[in-house]
Image 1 (cartoon, one colour):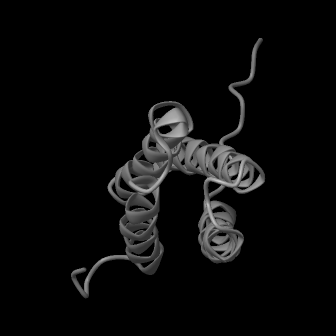
Image 2 (cartoon, rainbow, N blue to C red):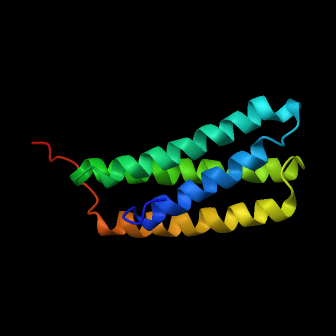
Length: 122
């Protein structure tokens, strides 16, 4: 990927490429349910990171919060794929390591942003 891209986006891009190769090997019975859900979340996280890069203020915080939630759902879906034995255990371990690193980066980016205060009423 391009050198000027944020590291977290690079890492997510590489995880998407890696995961797509594994999703293609899912058995038909899980490829179009679980596989599509994982694929959708992978793209959602990548797209959310790119949107956050170009967003400012409270909207950036909201984008990063949504990315964090999508990443958590992705972790759970990967765990399900591991427990259903459609994703090899070693592959699951790699995916979890990568998602944890990406999660730490997103968490750090979130901490840099100030949590938007609720508008005062009255």
